Amino acid sequence: MKLFLKGDRCFTEKCAVERRNYAPGQHGQGRVKVSDYGTQLREKQRVKRTYGLLESQFRSYFEKADRMKGVTGENLLVLLERRLDSMLYRLGFSASRNEARLLSRQGHFSVNGRRVNIPSYSVRVGDVIELREKSRKIARINESLDGVMRRGLPSWVELDRTGFKGTIKTLPVREEMTTPTFQEQLIVELYSK
Image (cartoon, rainbow, N blue to C red; front, side, top):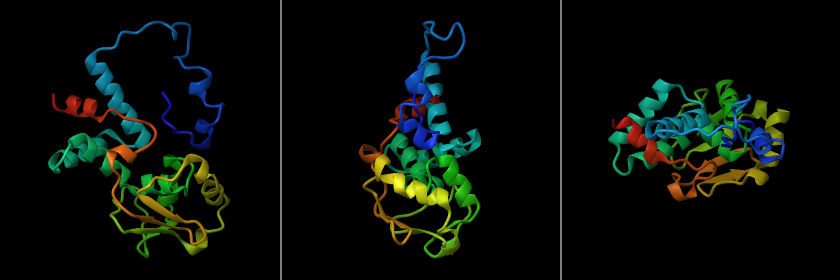
């Protein structure tokens, strides 16, 4: 299944999942019967790898989502989308979440005028994420900003391309979250055992 981890490559026909959608090796095309636990674990691993989290980090986000009011699965996805590296990816400052994590770690961005170099920083509604003045000439960031229209900009963020700024208008709603589609209920079932 496509996780869009390779940036722009996943939007072309060169994506490995498009070319060969089975496991490598002589037994890769065999039929596999997966248990309920296996499907739940696979879904948790998909979400965890998409957002680039370790197990303890993911467990911490799940526990925080479980304590919040509302549906636990949706709360979990909203918490993950609010991370700074995820917002940088959504705003188009990077081609992948891994690249966004690297750029934020190197201190290229500021949130509300203060330099932030923590990828897991949780942004709030109304926060302004801005590319620092020294970093505006980085070719990779400019290429990503040019390609953001192909990927699409979510409705809960607003991008000022000329000012190298992005604003968080609202928190993401489950119906507005785009690729890939997760079945967060399976993760809740897995952790509720």
